[in-house]
Image (tube, rainbow, N blue to C red; front, side):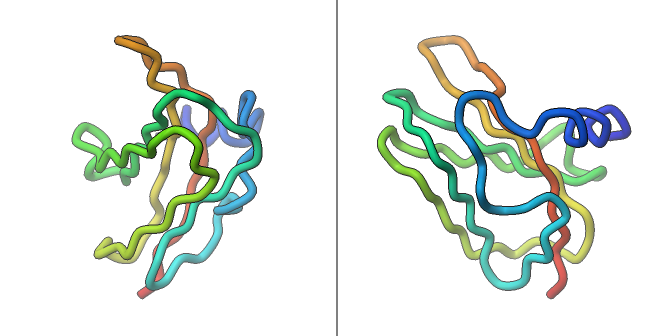
Length: 103
């Protein structure tokens, strides 16, 4: 987790520019991801905290979309996310961030 914090502070995205959520955004009922740029490949967003980092929630986004919203049932606390481009059997990390759940 400490390594993720350092990576988040250095460079937030590669290729696709994430506009939402901002780093350390407070999230209540729904979690929205928005980005500029597009891809013809599927995106995957992994969401986890210190307790779930080995078994993250993985959300897949179909090509052509520039936003994704979920109603969550996460407990209060600090969460991390990373966005990966799925190219065939390969995964390329393109963005990384964190947010805070306050229900």
